[in-house]
Image (cartoon, rainbow, N blue to C red; front, side, top):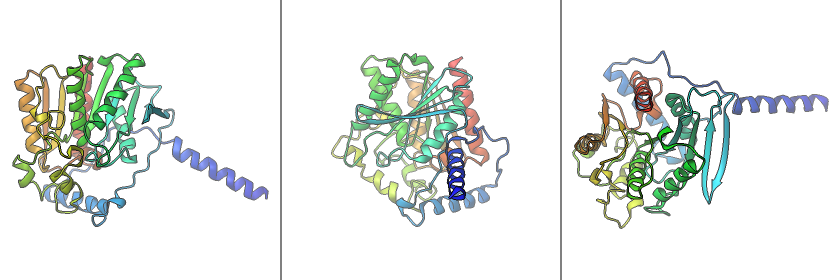
Length: 328
């Protein structure tokens, strides 16, 4: 009996250590430098394995572990599931609000929780908030926008100055970042310090050329490996029955004047490439400070999926430098 008890106790200790005592991530100093052909083969194999023959239930399983010394809390904000990670030893009092991607049809997953740690490190932030906004097809626009406004108001209510807040969104999360920033302008509410947009979904229309010429190159959103998101974008659940030119669905049609500085990162193989280029042009025309970086032959959301590649490490450094520059 005593041996069984000791075994169970040891098991609990090991499990506790696995969940709550992970090493703190840092931007890699060593990374893979591949030729174009090697890179495409590497990406193809990794994405093919992730999608597992087009089965969404077999999406990559990422193990989220809270770094040692960090605090992690889940809370409910009037029905909106929210989470916050805090690094008590952070260099600054910056706060990140993460807007997760997933085509407005996938919720907050372990891969985004894991990425939140990396975002907090890149931003040198003390806290990063996450929220699991309502999803389509059950909930259409403006459900996710309303939820994002709710969590942002809560952060402000906690006394965090807007100039200390950074919005970071990937894919549909990038769309939501822009939609919320437009909503804040409309409601005369304070803007965050800056916007970080990873492979943002800038328009829900399918008119721009890269939606076609990159359909086979983009292994995530195209139709080469899985048509899950490809089909969703052809008939957007979140915008069902709505005018796709609505600026809060397609920020490409928005007046961007007075929005915060934005960093736009996109891969040259993405079907979103042209809209990211057009977003940058429109930002410049509206006197909004913007930086657009196109990473050669990289796929949609590469910053989340390929931490080990040189291009992703370069993107991480760019995010950190952009935030440091705008917050100094």
